[in-house]
Length: 323
Image (cartoon, rainbow, N blue to C red; front, side, top):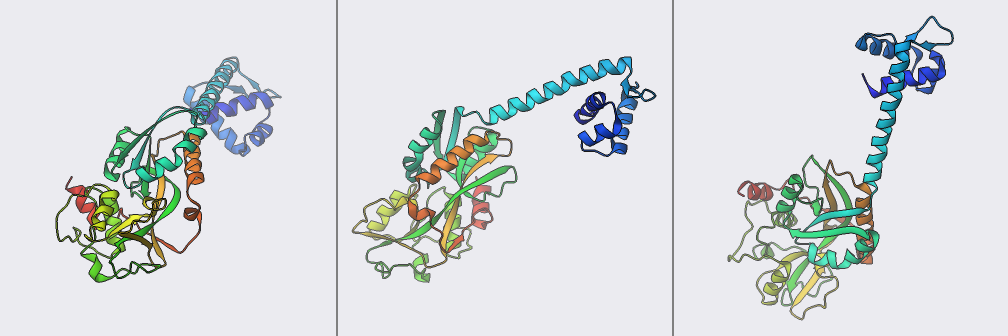
């Protein structure tokens, strides 16, 4: 017994004619007849007396049709409830933001998000990509803002914008006065990366066309923030590749220069990520729009970019396998 079959018998009772009922149900007349026969065989009762013209239900069939009408009403009520819940803009939403983005994006867009969702309590958590993906799977957060694609078939990704990478160089670097940075082989062994940020590091290694399981280093220093990377560069220790938002509104240091790469510039795609069971699509749309409207104009421009993936990186796979 299916909802569709119940709907068929209700419409048949209303129209009292197979051809008219079939047309109203957008089904062929033989198809409608077959479905009615299947239902009658399943319950072991005749619902309609086919000898009557116009078509009439049997006494038991009339009771079944009444129950079918109630069942269909309940089904419609469930659908209405689900739609209402999906469109409800209130409650608590836990939003996880990757640590290489959160300190720069959230101050930009928080006010717009609060304005767009005045009855929603936003709980914002900053963490690594690996931790946020685990928390999404476990239901500990509702939405994550990550660099995508994630490569998880059970996640849904809603792209917001593309963020270029910049070369962050000490002022004594030979390219510090250039308008665009060209990666030189001699720079590669000076590349500074972040501890635990396997997604971010995977992108950097791809930009440098490195396929090693570990990034090359001349010394060990567990750097945890992009700001710490910049301070290392100010002291003439290596160079870094940093996201655009981490530098766009800062005063340019006298000891650090941040310049774009040559075209096509490497970028990371930033997206809202949820599990495939997340239903509050209106909240997603509001957050997406609030972030987009808060972005600097430069990030909304269309440029010559190449998107850097991380989910297929050997470095990423090796790193998370060891966790």
